[in-house]
Length: 154
Length: 154
Image 1: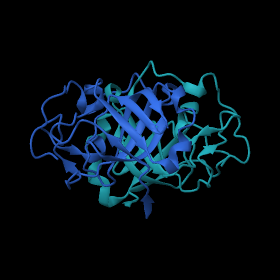
Image 2: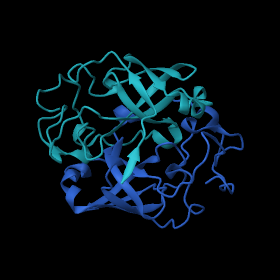
Image 3: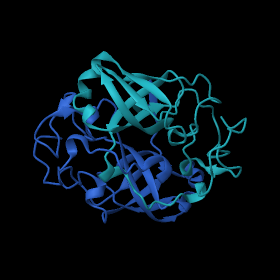
Image 4: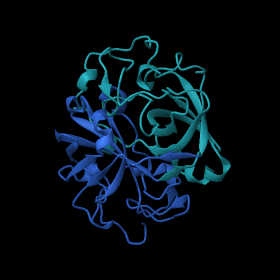
C-alpha cells in the first residue's frame, strides 16, 4: 500500500547477525558510516548542527517469526510490538546514533547496531525536547542486561 | 522496493493540518487512541508493561516539497533530514507517547501529534536506556519555541 525508497546504505563492521549488537546503546563505540545516495544529498543541509541523529532502515535480512516471539534479552516470549526485534510486520528499525562528522554525503556515526549493507530509508534529527523521556519505565526489559544472542531467535 | 502494510489507525481530535501540533512534546495532554487491526492484536502482548511507546505512522496527507524546505519552527529553510517535517522522501513519522491504558487492541495515549485517521505501521516500546539522550544538542532548533504554523509549509 505504501512503497519505500532506499535513500542510502549503512556500512558497519558487522557482517553477521550474530556479531551485530542487540542495541546501539550497548555498544556506543561501534562506528559506522552512512552513505546517502547523491539524489538525496541536498536533504542533509544543516544536519551537522545536531550531535545525534535517528537512522531509519530496513531489517532486510530478518526472518519470519510469529507475532509473539522469542527475543534476545529475555527467555519469555513477548508481543512483537513490546519488543525492538527485527522480525516484525513492517521491518523498519531505528537507532539513535552520535554524529561524529560529515563529509559530503557520508556521515560517520557511533553507537550503530545494524548489519553491514543495511538499506537506509530516513534520517531525522534527535531532539531531546521531543525524544528524551527520562522517567519512562523499562517494562519487561527492567533489569535485563546485555547477553550473548541466544541461537534461533533471528 | 519495500511495501508497508497498514497495521492499524490512529484516532485524534485533529481534523486539519493547521490544528495538528507541531510536535507531541508541545502538547503533552493531547489524547488519542491507537486501534490495532485484529490480525496484529497478538503482537501487543506485554506492551502494558511500558509507560511510553513509539508510534510509527505514514504522513498520508503531506504534500510534496523540495529536499531543502521551509519548516514550521524556523524561517530559514533546512535540509529535510535535519527536520522532522512530514514532506520527506519516505513519509514515515514517529512520536513517543505516553501509554495511558490498553483495552483489547485499543491503546489510549497522550502526547499525540498526528492527524485523525493516520495509518499506523509499527509500535515499539520506548526504552530509556536505548532512546533517552539527555546531552543531545538541539542543533538549529536551539531556542526555537512553539509557534503558530506559518501557512504554505505543508
